[in-house]
Length: 321
Image: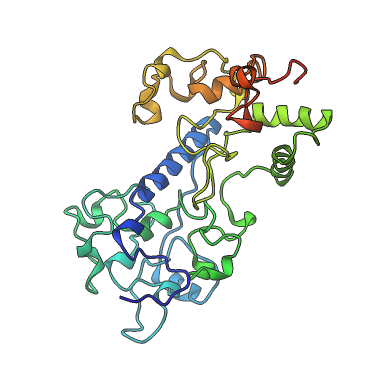
């Protein structure tokens, strides 16, 4: 085939398939659940979906999660852009009423070939609509726990997005439905990484506050490929830090350390979970307010170079704050 689109959202070969995308969204949902558990908050209950409401909302620039792609399109085979239509056209394009399934891919039929063909509203899942997991990408991306929680892959050049205002991803900061680092925090880090010579005592003090209190405490909202090690946001359970205000110490958790290198859910790494009083992993230990910059950097002492650069949690000079 010959795709003429400058920015195509579909894979043209097996090499382009993002095989780990579904698990990454699931990880983001897990991170959001961890945050809610710490804050004692519950996700809002979805509104009831009605066909009358869906028809009333058609043509609006905002997505109503209670009706979007829940009802069949009545335009028949008339020519129109299905991506910009709030109604579904086939099983792969259909969402069941929200609130009836979790933001996890169904291993039996998620985006399966059988679900992509034909006008029927049924899926290839043996449990049918009673299944408590997502049957397709639309059900996952437009789930309340996933919708608008990451930036669009086209950000900041969002004019190239084919779904426009109906995109499941955020096109600007105000649309993101999770906490982001403050603009001034991002500007501080940009200056911090730019030049060591320009770092004033006041900047160094602010940087210490950032690295000990904010660094890696929020999940990354960027879906495009970038360096996880240099990113200020967290990407995995080992990369994520609970906020030090919770009161855990800088002492390593022995239970967590016993599972280093194993691919386990957060809850299975430590029986005390989020409320454990010890540090879960190196990030929580090294960037803890009681530990950060209290030990010398052995790499710097050996040959005057450090692979961690401006993010190093060890001091390169005894005068470092």
